[in-house]
Image 1 (spheres, rainbow, N blue to C red):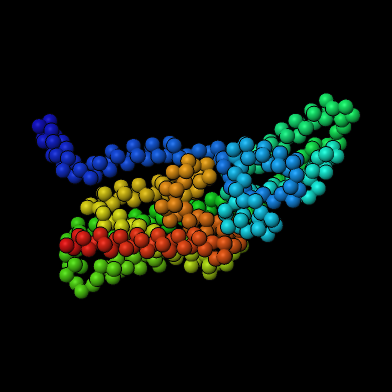
Image 2: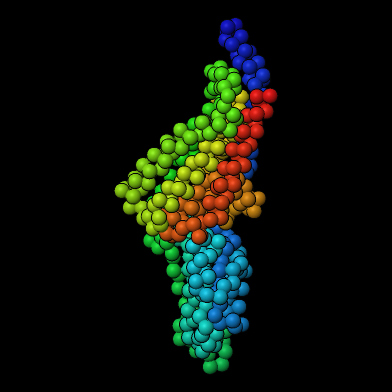
Length: 374
């Protein structure tokens, strides 16, 4: 017992000296529990919605008000053509499109069924399911209200439901789970391996005593950072190729876009993830700290990027926090190329975001490493 007590005392003293590791062990779980407890919400509301109202009548405005009042649809994008609506949905700016025909008001006033087309981006199956069920419910409730008024009116007649809600799910009309999950899993694999591998790079050199040898070489800081990143770029590309092949052969994953473009975007995402790992390595003093910080990045990437839960369901602050993760933009790119078949014209904001992200993170890594040299 005396020997055991001495060993325990030694461990507690060592833990007290390594305050950063101890703080990470205590602080990270509390922070993540609070963050995800508020951020995770499966009740998907405030879906950005494009509206093509060809009727411009009191009846069409009344129905659209019902969609807006539900809280599930934000009618942010009034459009003037089908092409404009299609472009917004392709880019991911709108998740839902509502189309009201020119004769909408005449059909409602004449006691006939007025068709309402609801286009849903089904590349995100959870958000699409919420949009479809809510749209159908709104149509039924509004139809019942009008039918009751007609029955109560003198000479009221009913020739069918006043509103005929016609749902058109795009990109994944059969709601195949693999089509939605496989691109996300591919991004998660790359995030986990790339960030974790490079997060150990500088720390491992320091613990093995070889960092000083690198410092005295004529290599510049940015050259050293690139030297730590470039070898793993090829590893990441091989991982992406294997994952994509498995998705195609095993899960029948459709590749509707350009495969070469997809690998170029993947290359950019790999470099962004490796840069983040290098930054973590520069801030860590031990490999344990590097692993903890990598895990701190990994879990938000799962929950805030749109991989597991729709980002539209998150409070605004967590929606914006998700933009600090490269996986958020890569998932939009992957699903855009694989399921929607779109290219750089629709995806340039996400591509530009990854370029800016990589530039900033890699620059911070170089600056941080210079500070350590001093």
